[in-house]
Length: 458
Image (cartoon, rainbow, N blue to C red):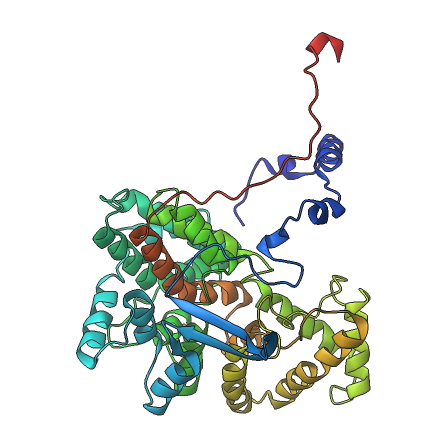
């Protein structure tokens, strides 16, 4: 964190506490009023189904099907441009190659690339993996933040100042800006982390490894992060898989919807992506995998026998009853806003997590995760009334995977961003192509009208 002579101003004074209570008094809304006025809070109906606010060709989430005229839950499905994510993963895994770059191509341009087009696209991405002159020295090394998502957002907004066509919203220029950000996100995040750790402890070596043209995005992340540049093939494959699974998730997720909302105002691409980063940073969105990791760290301290189902189930009950971990009443990594029976991304990921845990000698930890995944839905079913089923989401395993890969917790959410920038870019292009009205939903005022009182009479 940057040293600041104004540290006293960051203290919460009694005056601030008093003003906070005024905010609370005049901004607290009776939850019954949402029902009275039929407000779809969170843009969801009472059953949790999202309100239809747009159309997209980029991706689709399927969590239910119609049987005899009734909507019933089904195993979750995720499609990129109409292609099942399971088929995409099976395709590049079976051919023993990396899949993120072709996934980016598919999301942006709508079709799977030919070998020639894929090679050209990889070369184009590498061409954009060049930061402006002195950017690392002048921007990344100055005032490094302890939160890499803020570092990413600040870097993205600063790229605006280096772009001679920053405000040009023509499609070719916006595409060029998107490709540049897709290419640069790994460097911005990894270099930001190196600057932060060096700033915290000057005895930590500050090193910058340039990306290499022959490496995939996943390989380059590990190459740039590790001081010896070394990684195993399995590590690179699983990180690549994580990038593919996180690249896009329907137009209704918070950060992709943010992309559409901000882009609809006509602002520049850098401001749009910075806003999406702010959304993803939240613990209810991209920051959830860190919560999962910390929850399991607490569980491993509190549960003596990791193989005792009764003891693990008791801890889960205590979580739900606000008597364990952060007292939030949540089992992090369980449940999803859309999926009920299963999250296809978690199902795919789990197959490779086991292999990596064996390579890393962490089979015992993997077994604990598997047990919690099996027990949690039963515990939640007993403790809570839910309108749909509960299953593990991708955040349940991703933090564990990143931990096994040796990624620092500070980079967990930025890795998510390195992937999701592909989906954001596709949604940004889609909004520009189908440009219409600015997105402006309605809010109903429930404040009573009052007369203005002159200052001397208050």
